[in-house]
Image (cartoon, rainbow, N blue to C red; front, top):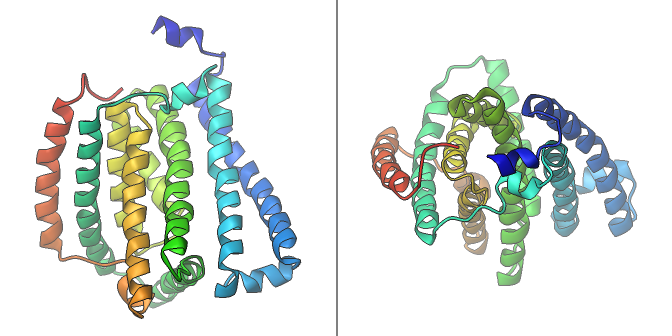
Length: 301
């Protein structure tokens, strides 16, 4: 604790949260400028042409680059800068230098696999929520726009493209989003409120909302809660990064399989499971999580 206090820079976590959100807004602006500039350098197109080409599969590599740059500006840099303003050792502060045993990482993978099943059942529940016809049209339009983006970014003609997709669509998002949401937002909220459940729930609602998907809202909220628990109990950011990557990689693998077999992405992505599958997975999750806790020296930190 004494060493931790020596690393403090005088800015508390409550202030750090406001700074983090403010930097995120700045990141949107800077990221937009960087992305447009990169697109112009790669394609020679202006912004108006870019908006059209972003849905053209022949520009899949350029879309991947611009989306990666944008996510780095919005999530990664703001979290690292805010952490540095709070602590002299930002990487340690957000949990990137924390060590855990190999067994705890195995538990994290198993817990994430169960979470995917739970999330599939929650997707079924999500579709049962009554909405007006106008809202339903709006939400489905959002999903269609999302699928268009996936269609472009998931162009994979061979194992080389698949490996690139694993990096760009699975690993990079896992790292930048976990640095921001767990290492930054949840971490600062937990330290400022002293309540790790409040931090996890608020972070998870923000995490799900920022993906702009009504029909995936409950699924992403559940995913984020599990990622938050892994982080709160281990203080090791690589734990939720690995779990997040596993979730993303399974999705990329599914897309690769659908493309290689000539199936439609819209018919295969976002699988929903029967509710009772989720109930069984939740029971198994609780049991395994208790075993996971036994591998740890103490509770949430």
